[in-house]
Image (cartoon, rainbow, N blue to C red):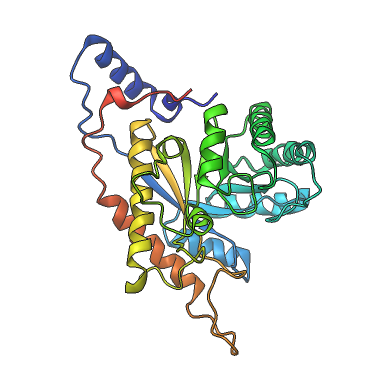
Length: 323
């Protein structure tokens, strides 16, 4: 069970709890929360050690990348992480990478997750970002699957954050909210660009209450989507200012929720990528933007964005253990 006090220094938690019990003013004047930005290795080519050096020089916290499937690969990755003093967010897919085998059962997905969570221990990741399940399963199967997945996370003593992603169980905000009602202990990686595509609109209608989801988000993958695609050509372009503003409002809501939950630090990974996401010109197949520059722009934009969030009015009475 992961409780909010796990993210607070014991002395701070004890002080706040004491103040609350004494009936003291519960308003927290300052609740500093650090933004740790990670670099995704999706789409990056070339020598990994060179990339790790760049990550270190950029002042980023670490890398987010797929869990290597062989022991030798995990040993090599661990060596490079230690050499460059970088943290690691592991990405795990249940069943196949990205798109699941349509014949694979929930039991097979769980067996695969069990095996991969065991392997992840070799790298001591900060947490594991899991792309789980299949969008075709009915709700009852989804609920049972996620309940069992949480048990596996507890078995392996790994913090699992389940990502919102097309083709997977959490492809839709409405399915996700239904799952939350029955498995409230789930924690999530929000890549809301996928939901924007699935719903073909920015989820900013007054009826689009994502509060139960926002209250459970652990990690952000920062990519800007729009109604017809998961990745705008460039987030700085004026014609995509509305999608950018929507995504940033969503991320800000998550940060405020995390501060209210007692997080000392939060993680964000800019994730503009290739594989049909990056726009190309017809006939010439020339990319319309440089992938590295897109993600660097997001790093700078979100550092500035985060610095402008006002955390000074967080109230201790709002800090609750969702469990």
